[in-house]
Image (cartoon, rainbow, N blue to C red; front, side):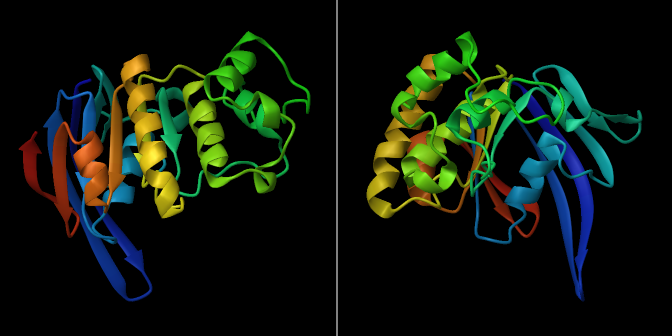
Length: 225
């Protein structure tokens, strides 16, 4: 993966103003952006995904220009070909496991049928060992199962990169080690580039081929492990 980011954004909330001014580039398959809560990590990841529009700058991923304020480029999120895993997984509560996975495979916002099937859905149910819970809804799943469903939904369209926002923060401590190992094995097997943001040094140790430390909206240190 080759990613180049050079963006600026002023964020305002009530009386508070936050300046995001982030610049970095990496050719690593595993980029970890590490920093305390409020450092701007999530906003940076959202900018790469197209969920937040910078005021100025540019974003390039895998040789494609996703955003360039000078050139008038702003690729829509659904056309950026990135898989995004939200911290709370953002599963659709009214859809079962099959439907949530299938949603990532279709165009538009129409709900998939409750017993939706197909080679791709069956593949991801099998890959994440979710066949036994395929008809269950998110509230009926364990934390680890919800994460697997969210990962399957993100990966089903074969994205060029996987973006992960604090992927283990919602899990019980006992689950985190096992899910780190599962994600590590999955990323190596699929060879999909990923950008992971975290405040947990154990995530840095597990996935930090290239570590970017973020402070106050800016990249403070860049380290290659």
